[in-house]
Amino acid sequence: MRLRSTLFTSLLLSFITSSLSAQLPPPPPGSIFPKLPPSAAGCSITEVSACEQAAAKILPVVLGPSPLEENLRRLTDEIGGRVSGSPQMAKAVEWGKAAFRAAGVDVHTEKFTLPNVWSEGETRLEIIGGAAGFPVHLVSLGMSPPTPAPSGSGLAGGIEARLIYIGEGSEADFARAGAVKDAILLVNSRIGATWDDLFEEYTRPPEIISRAIKGGAAAILWTAARERMLLYRHNNEIDGRLERIPGAIVAREDALRLARLSANGNLRVRLSINNHVGGPVEQENVIGEIRGREKPEEVVILAAHLDSWELGTGALDNGCNAALVIEAARAIKASGLVPRRTIRFILFGGEEQDVVGSAAYVKAHSAEMDKIRGVIVYDAGSGRTTGFSLGGRRDIEPGVREALKPLDSWGATQDTYDMQWGTDHFDFMLEGVPTLVANQEVANYLVNYHAASDTFDKVDLRELKLNTALAAVAAWGIADRATPIGKRLSHAEISATFEESGFTPQMKTRGYWEAWQSGARGRKP
Image (cartoon, rainbow, N blue to C red; front, side, top):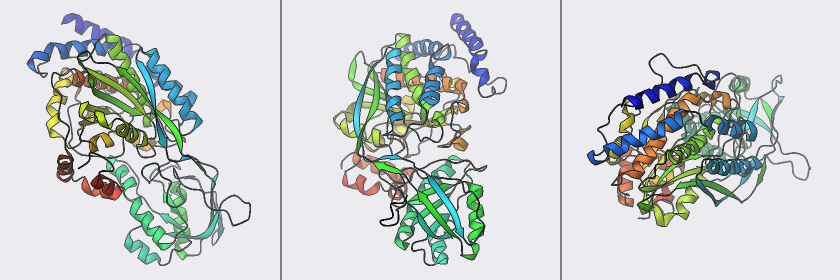
């Protein structure tokens, strides 16, 4: 045990004095890498030795010198933002394949169809009447259609209309506004600081959009939830569809000024969104694999999404975790460990268009769902892992905790039982497969989420290495267990979990409910 402790301390010292000093400041004294305990008693008694030995082999590979930082730098600095369907995304797929091969891991790609290809053209808002003009900073919503051009004009698309401030966009707000036909609407937002705030950014729009379309509005402007003129991009529709109405996000300070100027009802503006839309087009998921020694047909998946929006370079969302998946595969391969079951390491495409790539993977592999023993997903930047969201499955927690018992002192034990949409575990969860989504500290994720500021320098490489070690140990531990961490649920059992977790209203709000009930999406009744 002394040898392991001495090796671990040596690795820590070399790691702390490495180039990480150029990244975020170190944590307070005493919170640097928690030590691997000298013994572990949490795996089932017959597997204690295997759990300890696996963690002891994986950690030095991850926490020591590695290609993780350079892999991430190439993806973000050299390829940059990578919207699915773009040339940059094609380069990112090649990056993923090359990185897996360099790690000695077998890799292939699997195609899926993205319904629409989208890229932003020039987006402009001009004040043309009712107030003195000023430059308005804004970006198109992701997947927004272009604004129409005047018929037969040959001009770039544009809408000239009255701007109506619609407050929070509630039914009462629309009633107070009166007629909104052919108007451009401006919707308020609160500053986003928490995961709940981000959740609200996605759950509010569908009803507001429906009210706007019902009233005949021409477009919607959304007040940015970030301060200091920071611009970012979201989309509101599901399944890779285009937005139902042209829309843009306006820098918060400019949006609040427009709201004040529109108070007398006489503000007129011209909105031009000259986006490029095409498709459908084939895309690829990148899949590495370490084949199991005893039950190769049974599979544990470790995944992250490879695509991003393009205002920044997609470092926190989700380049760092794409690099994590590859590094975890490298560490397991380099350790010489061969798990009982197969581990697949997947980089999904089309996630930002509403998990199109992972949904397609689940559909293509529907016959294998009974054999998928767990799906682990990382998708929240480089904040420290505090535990996992278990998709309403209390029954799988003992197995998860056993797999990670050697790292208990790291504190990643705060599991939650909520169900959630919005990342690549979703369709596996709807199939009744055990899912683990990493719960992570917010750190600097939300302020840079989908924003121009989401760049390589925002990634905390120290924490990313810790997260990688946890992910690798979790994937190996779940894959090597004598028994699965939990069964696959039936349609009825999944529905019961929806009710217990309060997930049914979210399914309805986001537009998934009918497909779930009919069996078009998720496990069939």
